[in-house]
Length: 380
Ligand SMILES: Cc1ncc(COP(=O)(O)O)c(C=O)c1O
Image (cartoon, rainbow, N blue to C red; front, side, top):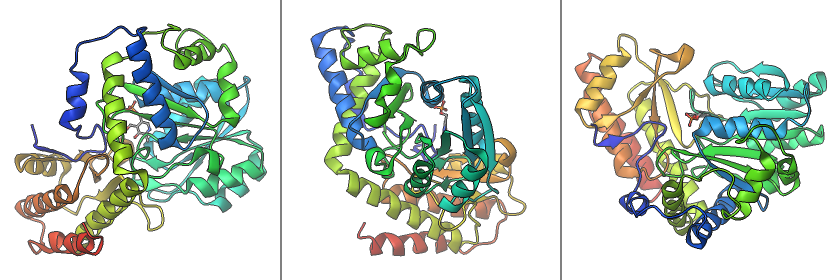
């Protein structure tokens, strides 16, 4: 097991959070759990920037995506436009299609996200009533400018669905202010909680989407929504201990302060990128579209992913490879949640020695020095 987990989720979880989940299991319909659950929902509202409804279900980010998609599609054949900037854009298209939407996909070249102009042009042609995209596309580390894209979608009267799996808790989200109707995440990324919770948030304007009965049991929005009002309105069993852990982590997140937390993420991302570039590593995401939570980089000529992974792991750091068409071509470093400046330095130091051992030419210490400059500049 590597000592330092630097993959783009799941991310390291603080001992206090893990310990909270290790308390004896309590009844999901007890007043005690109801209070913990409501507390978690209230704090999630702050993180998502919404005064509307928040839903927490046992499941991964993909369940959150399916739930969000099924709730936002109000009739069969409703037109949805997916802005695809990588692997998970494909998931959004699949989820919306499965929810009954007629899906059109607009694909960006690798490393690029979308601009307001792209959305304006696409919506003129497609007349979609739903527009869906990733805040951070984890497979390429591309970040989309949510506020600008949502503003453009609103002008055209479209509903906005944002995948915040790789951003919520690490990058700013203001659903109410920006006009994001539905946004979702999983517990395992920048919320610094173990995997297993699907989280879906609605703006106050879009909360009516949960008044419908929907289909089946998980997608019976009305009953799920009643359970979110009070867990005494049992519909499905909540993941009790994970919700306890989530509440603990949210308390820590809010006590760090959202602005401070986002600033930390931005600074660490900048330091990591400066370190990589100082040793000639090329980043996948173009300037202006770079995420604060994850960084994808091209594998240098002659360096094979399985070997780099093994060398890094032998030095105590676990990083991630490429997904889909980028498998074997890139590597990805996660820097979200509880990651700190020392973790970034340790990762770059291990990367320098790992790459050197694989024959890549570099000056040892150059990546670390460049990152140190940024960290010092940021007061970290
Ligand atoms: C942006 C994004 N969307 C969706 C998912 C799917 O989430 P999960 O793997 O938790 O099902 C991921 C997973 O990494 C992701 O990064």
